[in-house]
Image (cartoon, rainbow, N blue to C red):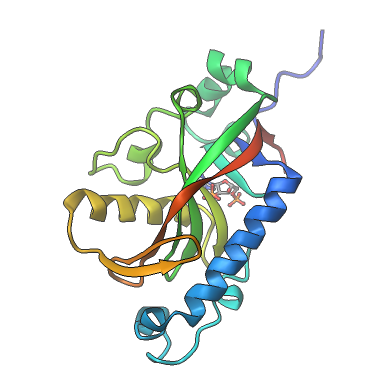
Length: 219
Ligand code: A2P
């Protein structure tokens, strides 16, 4: 028997394995580079605090990138966050811990705050998704379970990683209300859409699959 009780991690999530992580970072790099040079993007730079028609280097703008690319399921802060002990004790979490999963990325997005990848979870993966993940950050709205699932690719100066999932829900909210997005053609193997307030989304014509391990991050 161990002397200490089990530790709750900083967060639980799917961690992208090295080879796929390198590829995903490269895909993100290409997307940010191409979007920076994309005329319709350069015409709408005010939301980024730049003058229109100038060039904004998004690679520099999103200078902060996570050490390990991952899709957070539950942020626990070592047990301080409400519901984290319960989450850690869930049967699905215990069973899934240290197992391999393939995540499907369906879109890449950029806002004046964050750059991220939208993740579409399978039924099995949804068993690891907390019931209240969406309500936690947008209590007034209703979303299909798993809507917040994402991989943070980069954040602007002074922006926390947690913002990426909130930005993604903002996109989904706009999609739910229908209409406002503008189809601006194809770049980087997908269709690029402009929403509003500096929000851009690239819907990939082929989903990107990444190999991951479900685990806890202890810092
Ligand atoms: P994300 O999952 O969007 O990348 P930190 O470095 O700030 O301690 O965060 C560690 C990880 O946990 C990050 O990946 C971050 O965001 C995620 N995270 C931080 N705070 C929260 C929160 N309140 N809810 C959900 N995820 C969070």
